Image 1 (tube, one colour):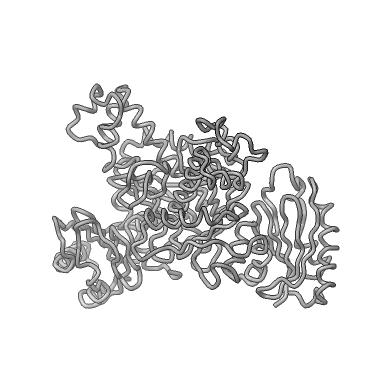
Image 2 (image 1 turned 30 degrees about the vertical axis):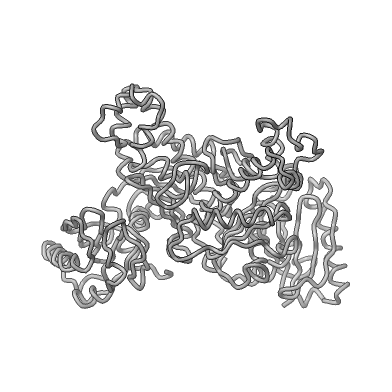
Length: 313
Length: 313
């Protein structure tokens, strides 16, 4: 089955044509500082046409258009309820299903990017064929998504599974969500510089001389034995692991996936997470499989077929 | 619709006959230190017959038997996977559906006690008619249950919604579940004495003279202005509230219920929880309703009809 898959990100969008579990063609579109979603639509349509042309598929031979979006969305109506800060301010007035019908004669479904990535991983990635999975995406923020009994858990207001916003330190740092001590506030790329700079003896750490205080820098410095970097790294690992234990106790999955850009340092992350979770999670039935996501930035695009064929939304 | 409803607790069991949303008759059975579930079954059968007799209902006019059990159970097969410590050691060998068939000619379903209480509250209690609810039961431990889209969230291994075992302090106290800093380890009746005794200046607190260090004592002392009691109380309230925020971000409900024996002091609990949760939970769609459970110890019995009529287990 063919489909058009569009992954809208913070800096660029990717328009692709997929055939079941593979991407036949893809075209990137710069989003720049697009505050306006409506003006982006002609660029997306042109990129879709280029992608269709380059693999010789007609839109009439596609089952539909799947859109991955970084916000809270309604898959069927196509409505967008929340967007990244300062982006796509007009998105709640855009009628995406109408655009898809008029531009391509196709139905459209939209889903949150963290959920699309999980759909992709369960369809053809690390969790292929599994029905009960939780995923945390470690990056600028910490995204979360839950598949339970083969169905995406969406919640009453379409915002279930906010895995990065589970407090693991009830008196902790203020989070962008309004709460305190969330996994994201205690261990994410946006929070890391502040966490490092507040650490005792930061000034003597090699981290103090890093131009960019991200996890790549942190893992470099901790691998080299810098004591502050080791301490901050171990704290971040414990935050992610403790949050994962809470999500396992909440959702009772068979597999737990970690994805996102931070997992480029998976060698320093995954063994710790697996050991901690297997020691601390109460799972008398056995052990939750702890896996790295394998599809990277393709995961959201490859969620297209499961989203478009989902029957029990 | 009539049904037989059996609520098995730690010290006694209650056998009742229900008619939709009301309890027609009930009989208590002392459980004592029953290590053996099989020897309890004749007592339960006798109590059921007494209850049926006292309201003049024949078992043939009942839709089935619903059992509320304090452990992990499989509703359809009737299998019991985990039990309270030192209780019912033989329960994984007991065939409850066979017992119900042979003793009463009726089908039987069993469910975890926290989930039964939530079913009852959503059927005829504080959340009557609502489909998306989370409940925390504050007592000796902290129980949790989730109704999502009108369905109990059970998880792959029937242990989803362990709301008391969400870590809110990643480096916190060891919990009985094997994790650290769970809501239950930081604020429950079993954890409270240790938390109080470890508090600075505990020796000067009126709490040091309490024969039983439970929440009733804590709320008495905090209401009288004892500074240690006020500090411990506020910490427990924040733990519950922070855990609730995590559960709201996980499950996206419309209503959050607090039940359990600790809620006898609801006047000192609910206003704090409501204020904290409404300030800290990210719910752009509106506000989660924060409510006290209203059915008390009847909640589990009144979950009978929704359990027995559930069609999508």
